[in-house]
Length: 323
Image (cartoon, rainbow, N blue to C red; front, side, top):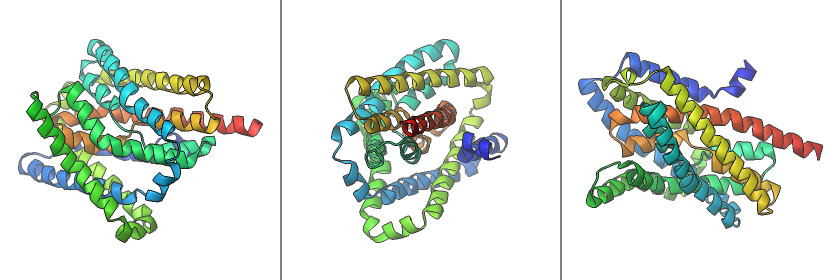
């Protein structure tokens, strides 16, 4: 059981259970309307908590390595989206239903908690990892909707519609995030003392969002447009993307003569994609009926990256012990 829990994220199992519930008992009619209002509130709460959890001391501690932060951001929001465009073209031929979701996956920010955990296990620069992962999460609030508009046409087709969409998403996500961070001097102590409770509220809100968006997708015929072949193809294409990024973030820092601890930060913070950010961002950017399909590749990639990066982190740790 311990080995299974180490390989499979319990949160992913909760997500699968939520998707199953939404597939069997989707919200319809007035229930869907109420769930949509509650989902908007859940998004506000999520980003308020994200802002409240962000420690300024942690950001300052890693801010000195600005070059490292820039390459992590470039990997997440420039290199990955280029791979995402290629992945979409491949998917259009082998699994068309997954094409948009694979591109959306490539636009997401890095994870925070798991990236930092893997950097710590591997013996990397933890303060720099905290700064890089946190900065990626913050930048993603603006960069992901902007890239989604440019590359996916989310929120409208004209320039005015695009600007309106970006401003709307910014207000829905960035404002509560900033409000939460500004409130940290007053609520930060409570948040830090009750991390377990805050984490449960955080993940509970995400699960509710997942139920809401998958309900809308199921009503629109999600499982009539998706089969096992599509899911396997999305997983394989996602793994290829991950392998390319992990290869580049191994070769480049060594070619540039970077220190081992910085290489580790770049690899783990630059290669990861955040499901926790991906759910509320998708719910804010896209119509609810589209979100379920978009999130399927993200959920598959989430588990795959955890397993691959776990092996890599342990390999780094073993190499460090051997000298």
